[in-house]
Image (cartoon, rainbow, N blue to C red):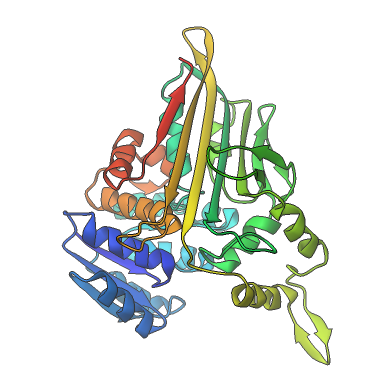
Length: 381
């Protein structure tokens, strides 16, 4: 199979690495970026049968031409391109998945279901870590029960060497980070879908060997799970894990308007605070240092009339041998797995479908294990 990766940033690099080094069925990979030198650098760093291309993701005609001849496409570019990229996939007969980042964009993609079915392809949004892997882990957990009552998801990317003031480092797009922190979160409460503000409902949690941690509501992590489970579950939520103290500090900056996209005038120049703030975060926050990814998915339900809980814990860290960060491994590798499952026809149904409805959880978990992404499963069964 031949796979196209759009975007040669951190996650694009991770996807190309997995396709070349962990995926024997992949014959060749194309990596494309607006900045050709970045694509070339990824191709050179990964080695193997990788072809670098230059592409402008906003140029639909060029995108269509690039898609041709590929069995699957993984989008690692900004989420606002994903609707047009999905349409290009339909036009060319290439399967498509992406790393998501915005619930409204996902809704537009899923509305293309009939066209995707007619084209005989899969379009599966939100295939990274969270949204992404955790949705499939949730489905893996629900299969253990006769009925499910609650699903609670906690995920965070953390620096191994946290530095003040935020004890955080950039491990993916700063635009994606800001979105998670300012847009509303969709949850299920008392059996109904509601929206709650991000950066709220702060809680403490523990992982063995880690200093105090906190988790709080953020947008996007539940993805399509509320719609999938509506009517069948009482509680479902997602929170982001950070070192204790991070939430209050960042929320103060949000409250001061630094994440606003509304133009203001400063020294007779129109600026958007969010753009300036994003640039400052990139300039002043550390990036690409050794990292951890922490995942906890808890599913509560009934089995043979008894209330039970199953918990999935992942503590992943940067691979010193390959240089792949924990965030690259747990975000890009799942997208690569899904792209290959689509290309091989190893997906439950064609169309534009949420991953929790399309991906076999057992096969997916097996592929994670093969990549040494270890899942500790505990249960009180």
